[in-house]
Image (tube, rainbow, N blue to C red; front, side):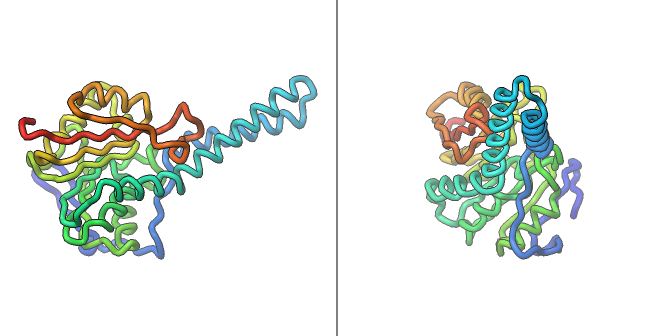
Length: 256
């Protein structure tokens, strides 16, 4: 790890960092505290439906719904989102020599999937590594996942704030972000992250953001222009459609 003049930590490429290798990438669980609470509530209502006679039908129904919601959440965080990002990265049609930046990379699910498609390019990550947002969220884990996937030589990992990126204007062909920007507080600063993402994009570059539908609607209103928004389906529901994910796409114009 190196320390830059502005305080940013640069962990470099995975083959230089030397993290412990794993047999395959492991991407953890998103918002582990939330799903733990959801599962605990399902267990409480399930137990109550067995022990209480009064209101048994209601508690049993609530327990079943919470159990189902927990299952949907776990499917999304462990499998569903991975399959959807594979699909969406294929749809983007990367040529293989692009410079790509992933904001709020976590343990590298999107970063690694993108790096596999960039044999002659580079996948760069930026995160502040908050454990509440993803279990085991540490840069050495991200680098280990890149090594396990065989793409360590084309991955860089940085500790950096999305609202003040340490990259020059027009540095990247693609900027991605998965379920990260909504975590920025206060919400007004989320627009700074969007502006920073557009700043570091080259003219003609593409911004691809997956986030909760209610947050993504605010993002598209801020970006305006030819931005598009569409739901990604139940494979990207965090327990229910009320916590479903939309995909925002925008292209940087020459005048931006």
